[in-house]
Length: 157
Image 1 (cartoon, rainbow, N blue to C red):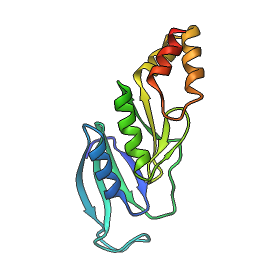
Image 2 (cartoon, rainbow, N blue to C red; image 1 turned 90 degrees about the horizontal axis):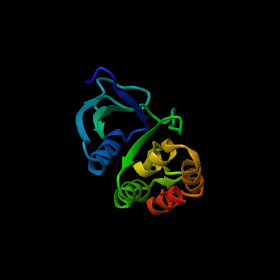
Image 3 (cartoon, rainbow, N blue to C red; image 1 turned 30 degrees about the horizontal axis):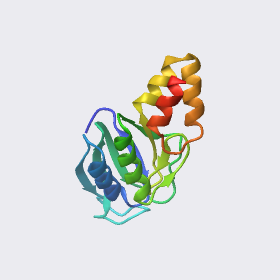
């Protein structure tokens, strides 16, 4: 286990979530699957308690802690994309697997974890400052999934 690991709380589907992430994002994998050594409020001895996994190079663990805790937008994975095709692939994988769209490149997977699918061109435009940043930002504010061509056009003016 890594020295610093993100712990994500799931009702009971940590293994399914980890497998979905590993299938969807490069540099992702499922590691150890650890059963509960005894009964606990959300499960029984032998149930999957902890799943070690990596998402886009980030070490994580999924804890099957029960329904008492839910995810919110205060935590999200931000996935930088290079093309519209890559943006579409990740967005469609998350939303198409029981997730939901939000605004400005944000979406949630079916377990409630928030994702920002963010084309690099958007971040570059905003970081450039000035009028091009404002135009790109204003264009982004009208979107759910980010449209790379629209951001590029807005940046150019």
